[in-house]
Length: 287
Ligand SMILES: [Zn+2]
Image 1: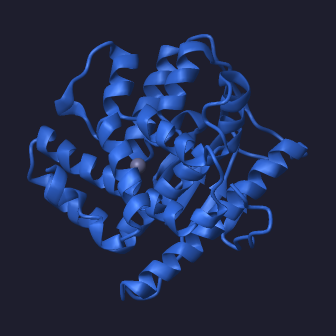
Image 2: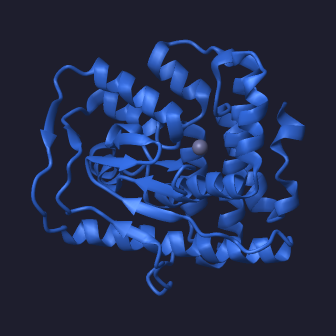
């Protein structure tokens, strides 16, 4: 993806390298690391719950309190710049879409880059939570070291564009919050069985994937060969069926909260192919 000449966002709070009060979870890897990769786009409470399960599953890890400021490595600076440029692209894309669709002025979210642990309006989180959006403070939280580790430890998959896809997906949850979709879903879920409530969550997640595809379409002149495949691979890898198979060896469709690999890939691709915000009604098609 061509991003170096793109403007920088004013709404990125880079807390990496700052002295932290949170607990950093170190160690891990192996199957746990792979599961962590599959959890990239889990986000929100779901991600935290599963992150906690992972913490419990892994007795070998150490907990260390982060103390004192650290100098960022050139690689860390680079990935921060990249994430910032992608975030700026989401700001410009959604400002444009809100204008085109007469949705009022786009209220931009903030993105917090952190290492180890972070306090949010949705509670405290660690790297194991995976990236997530907190509607309570309108912030996207990203631990970029997590992605760096993925790249070095798990090879080529999970490249730069996969990170961009994850950022665009989390910003999609912000759009849902601004437009009231998230509140509507939460309200409806209160009167539903767990299984039916999960079906609504799936539609909400698929819509965020659609929004990520839409973002890619609006920035297609910056996309290079292989980028889309990376995003589609990532969308595919985080399907509930793929994750359940990895974690428990079998699939329980009634427990799906994010959609199958095929559904996630389908909606990301739909967003990219149509470039049409009005096609976003995953609820009408998938419920
Ligand atoms: Zn999500």
